[in-house]
Image (cartoon, rainbow, N blue to C red; front, side, top):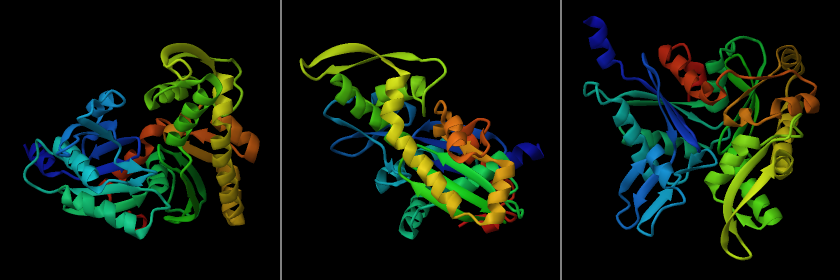
Length: 339
């Protein structure tokens, strides 16, 4: 009885507000929402018609009366009103069995976010129904989610590659010692495939198709075994639907520039790292998290380029939101890492 009543009151929420996906962690329950950060609107009234997975089904198939938008771009809010509606929808969804108590919310933000952007995230969450809002940098949340000793005098390096940004950070003593946040991440990799297909095959493909290609055969370099994928699009010369087969070597070529930009940022971060922490990273390695960590061969390419051990985290897509869950369990203990 006591447990049931306390669970009704315990409504603290952790949110990984990502450009591609929004994940929600509820204290005592774990990850309860993992849906695309997409909203379908009625064009004239701007009233939401669908949010999350339902809205993604409409992407690229909408009629003139419907607008499908991604309210976050490059890891930050691009459309405040739509983001607020999306947050309200997800908060209400996880609060349906709770008493009328406004939740405390921990939200992740990119390490390169500005004070204005941080205030926008905070205000959107407050208007969506939060009682208190705490912000935490994404690489720090990822490190906590993985279980790294962020409060110790030991250097840890985390690369979190999401949809809008790639976050590279060296962490020690509950702080980010040096970091870089670049807008070369999942979305740019997808767009690179769209442009490559247009340039190389005269084929216009949508974002969803390009994303499927990236997930199926995308790689950061040559693979031991070449993969192939069948894709459909609009042939640009004759303007008719066409099916072609692409291979992993082509897609690696399409992604080469973006992958090199991520590797260059890792090098630059390492150059700015104090020697004692660099020695720790040599011993402990680099941890890869986020959806971009699943890109085939990226870990091997980083090993070749940096000569450091590289480890892909278990379930890299949820590391950040799992970190918010650990923070919720001990908000007082993690005050140093919260904004």
